[in-house]
Length: 509
Image 1 (cartoon, rainbow, N blue to C red):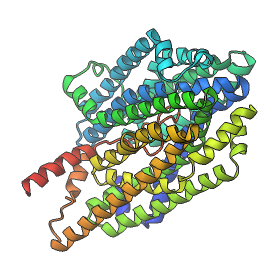
Image 2: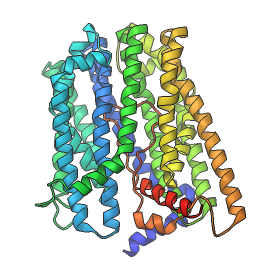
Image 3: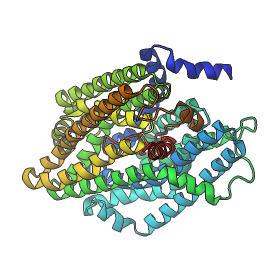
Image 4: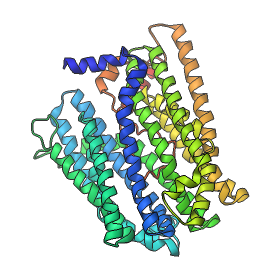
């Protein structure tokens, strides 16, 4: 217990730079591993099956976002509640939440797969498939959907491992799937000559073996949180709470699904099937640097949250500023690579000359404002870290729904396929301005309120509340990195804190 207390206290005493490195590095490793996992199938499919197969794979991205939306609702909701119940020493209820997590993932995984398999061709056409890409997309998705329940359980158990103070185990599970998938892909695609189906089988098999290991870890009866009899029957109250917390990440992933559908269909209309494949490749490349920035944000969150609760605002802002600098350096590095060496990056995925040319041009345009995304992401996560989940969600969803979608509908009419690529950096720029403005307004109000009273601060610094709820920040990264960039981490226990703050504001008038 003393060791844990010391680990908590160092959030308010240890040099911020060292703290950020300590907390962010494991997250960055896990995020990069997840990003590489997302790239493996694309690389082997592009090199071993062909350019049109890459386009077919890109058509499946909305499926992953939609499946991820349901998985996020359950994974984030249950892991957040588990953290809260463990902090409250309500261990029996925490175990019931674990059981309900498994049951809900099985139900949604099977239901989602069954419905999608029944209408697979119609859905794929709606997502942007053509006669040329439909076969590849169908062959891949049939296998993925048959193993969908495995995918749900794998990601759901990873979220539980983080909530059970086993982040290293969660990271190890992710790295295991990356390594195994990388080994199995060439075997199934090349050696067994199974093409794109082989990539899907390698993916599901990797996740299945990782899931078995996760279940083995969670079966240890010596742990407070473990698998046991009597915890799997759904309880109405727990299910309602899980869904209530998980509705925000569900909305963000569902929004990402809608955006990718619009992008795919626009690319088919203005640029053809290869443009869809080009977007898939470019999205994966950009996602590497986005994931690193997400790791920095994940490391920043406990530092900012703790010092906000302790009213140590100088340390809080130091953590934010260092995170902005670090994230900006990362994203600027990505920008420089994509602007100077786009064709070299694309060659990893395909040798098709036409696809390489389309992707290189699109990648240059797509990454035009990449350096400012790091700052926008940190500001969004700052609001999340201090319990302002609604502001964080607003910044995330406004970029997708209020900015990006209108840009996707307007710009192509004037600039054809280039307009689709341009819509992404234009949205980045506008959302950056919005984030900086909101941050400036919030900090100005914060300073005014602090001058008025040293005891009553309008932003409601509730250190006791933070301790009571044991804030948990969970990430549910889409399996294929298909979410348009700028999505915030999913809201967890901070939503509960937000509700408490609203009640306090009402009492204070």
